Amino acid sequence: MFKKSITIFQFVISCSVLGILLNGCELKPKFNNVDITGSNSFSPVFELEDPSHKLRHLDDFKGKVVIVFFGYTQCPDVCPTTLTEMQGVMKLLGEQASKVQVLFITLDPERDTAELLENYVPAFDKSFLGLRPQDEKALNDVTTGYKIFFQKVPGKSPGSYSLDHTAGSYVVDKEGHLRLFVRHNLGEQTLADDLRVLIKQ
Image (cartoon, rainbow, N blue to C red; front, side, top):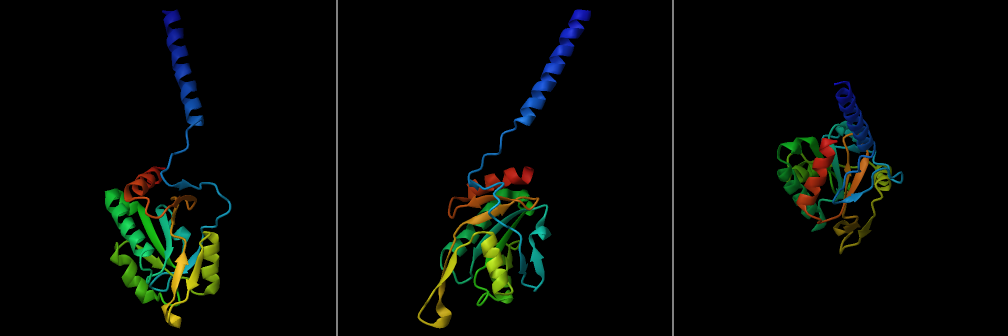
């Protein structure tokens, strides 16, 4: 009887040690998109205006997984395509969509007024929020922080220019840490799967 008790005790201890070892060696989550967790070359914080002219910061969205996309409302292809894709992602997430915030940051505050953003961005999903830099410094700060490339391409008239810009999006986790770079047009399901992983963390 005593021997049997020792054997059971040793088994329990062995299982406990194995559990500790497995937890200590927990594998990093595997993402479909580019994992940039821990990169020190980005600064995802910002101070930008929402359509009601209220200054918003990344910390305002703590507790949610945040998708950050840069574009402009007169963009003919990449921007509406991306926002449509985000709309599809939210549908795939179902009830979990309430734990995700999509932010559209304009690279063209000269033409993208607060009123225009208020109408354009939520047209894809009522939860989507458009943000705009209030001056040149704020625009440079946020684009530098996220390593966003953009430049004006002159049109036939001064006001008819277009913008070349980075087409991907970024995902920030619930604690405000930059986690993923999302390639343009990779697919709704792949992003939805990645977001579910971050929502659970």
